[in-house]
Image (cartoon, rainbow, N blue to C red; front, top):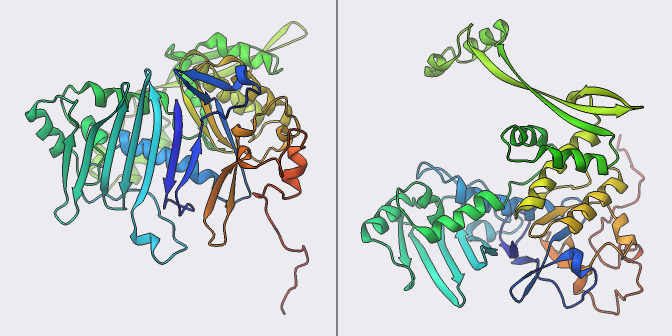
Length: 432
């Protein structure tokens, strides 16, 4: 579970901004929204509102970038990190960027902080609380010689041979956690942290992400419960009674094989191309609809965009129900009717125990009903005078702006809360 996530000099974010899942003192909707971990109270949901180009998606991209540099370390020292610092300033492109993540895994609290430039990880620190704060490791990089140095905390016992092997495999553009993935050593503490990034923090879901492939594969592998998906789809009023997954073996069409041969004609990859008799497994997905007690299997490609989207969300929801996952979703409302959007959120809040959603959204209707949202779960992004992202919560406003009786939707639409676009008039003057 995430406690706090901080970002500095990354994309549209210049100064340090922090998104927090720590609940405020209010007990409003406590049972639905709040997870208790020891003495901590953490929220299951963070919804981020704001105008286009205000930095909403940047927050999710930063979290996804952090996951990538842990789980997908660069292979060569010459590879650059795929990000951009804040570019609307003469100084920030030459400064380091920073990401800091505070999270809980298996009842242990961790603080992970990484400072980097495009060519290298400049510094890196990992702390854990068990129960008191202790350093797991500190990493520094000699940028002139492109060498990494790792210092372990006093509570960490590691064989010197293992220590040297890890240091050697942590390239200057790799995190220590990424270096661990390249090293054949037994290191329980690093393994636990890497597992959190791999199994609990999920990749960012974008509006065009095809979740159906992922969900269907997981159902076939028995890693997502098929009956969960059917039940979730039924509850959402899709009249879907079954999921039919059929695996077939087919030959590659000859014309496609010829196309591949031409594409790789001048490449040494031609030896890896399939032959004309080789067969491939294909998967056909159908959703069975029951209408007037008759069953009609429909090819997935013929379903509406909303049905396709919700099938994917149902898979994510099933995972969130049965384990602890963090789901970053960009434009959560994409292809969904507002009522279905609300239904999905309430289903998540009322049924999950240790999962979280961090999502960007333009759907404002939820702000009209205080019976389904908490102020500390609503976040806004806005641009300051330097075109840099500012991130703040609805809970940050005092009673002079937001009272218990305030209609938050009206306050947001009127501009009292900021984070709305300010377009000019609609008249366009054409120059001849």
